Amino acid sequence: MAISVDTFFLNPDAQGTLQSQIQQMIAEGILSGRFHVGEKLPSSRKLAMHLGVSRITVTLAYTELLANDYLTSRGRSGYFVSENAPVPPSYTPQVRSEDRVDWSRALARNFTEGDTPRKTQAWQKIKYPFIYGQADPTLFDHANWRLCALRALGHKDFVSMTTDYYDQDDPLLTEYIARHTLPRRGITARPEEILITLGAQNALWLIAQILLNPRRHAAVEDPCYHALRDLLTHSRCQLAPLRVDRDGLPPEIIPDNTDVIFTTPSHQCPTTATMPLKRRRELLARAREVDALIVEDDYEFEMAFLASPSPALKSLDEDGRVIYVGSFSKSLFPGLRLGYLVGSEPFIRQARALRASVLRHPPGHVQRTAAYFLSLGHYDAQIRRTATALHKRRQAMEDAIEAHGLSIAGRGVYGGSSLWMEAPESIDTTVLAETLMQDDVLVEPGAPFFHEGDRRRNYYRLGYSSIMPGKIEPGISMIANRIRQGT
Image (cartoon, rainbow, N blue to C red; front, side, top):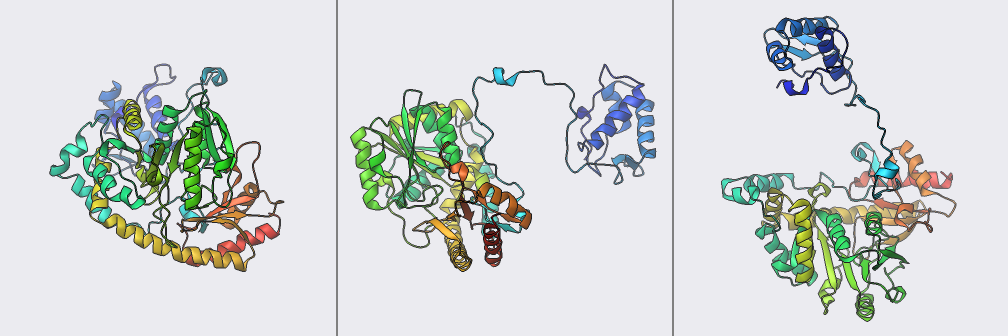
């Protein structure tokens, strides 16, 4: 397939002959990586017509590039980018203008201070990836997901794929969540009380936008999911970080003026602490006492392979004050970006309106594919398969950690996919993580999870959802060696 002729244009202020300008334009496209080896150039007739020049001018430019080995000719097939062309590994556009905007004044609000950790995109190439929250391709049911996607593309589902639902969701997916997913957590909800979101992150953003403002007070766990802390900061609310213990968030330390409480009771992020049933009831009582709402992020409840998970806070709620956040992004795959909100109808009505004004709704085809994958039993089968694999990896992790003398600070009572680790106080795990990359080992520093001003730098998280069992012990050994060496 030829490179689109629309990507070519002549700069009216350029110097030199038309032939040299065309030659330079194509050479720059190759050198910057915009044109790849083997790609076909437009025919000389089409390019000449598009640029408004004579065909011979384009032909002469092509001929010169051919002589310099930027292009190659294949009989009557045309001109192609040569295999010998000096093509860089990735496309880097050339700077055409200087940025003279004073962005410190132009930006009305800041959404990052530059200290938010970024996921390592090439983690699959790392030999010992103790990374959290990434999908293991060996555990995912590609074949049945593909069949469900094809079914969702069929004529029967054409409307569900192409319709602008505006503020509504796929009825099949909503029905499955209401009839199957939520009852597993002891939750009863009508469709009017359920909203599909682009993952839990989108759900939390909607909540913050609706419930918080500069006059409202929010209580958040410390340490906590750093992206949650960032979006709460963006809401400009009064934020109270509350230090968690081995059972999660202590209800008695919640301030009296709290309006919204954010908590992860099933698997506290990142310590993996599981909140006991007694404390869950105490948390509900404390919220009632101060008249606060509770936002329950119930991620990873499916990853319970050691024992059955405790009832969701939402299932114990008798006042309608708990807003429940669920997600399929962790249990299926992160790129799916599909989650859901459950709450009282007046709240969901506002969340639905806000979502519609920002992004309408998650793509219909994605919703219908997920609905088929869930309703046909493929999801349950994958959860069982994943739980079995994680159980084996968890055991291998704990055996290796014990053998090499490392310290576990927190482990989920019911399972999960990570361990919260504590290094000696002299160890800065940000430096440790950078040093371990030299050994092809990937770990996650713990400092970003703590509230600014009181960050503990000797904690780190080890995920085991994407590392093969045979690589666990050698990787743990390298971590232990680096810690003993003081990094």
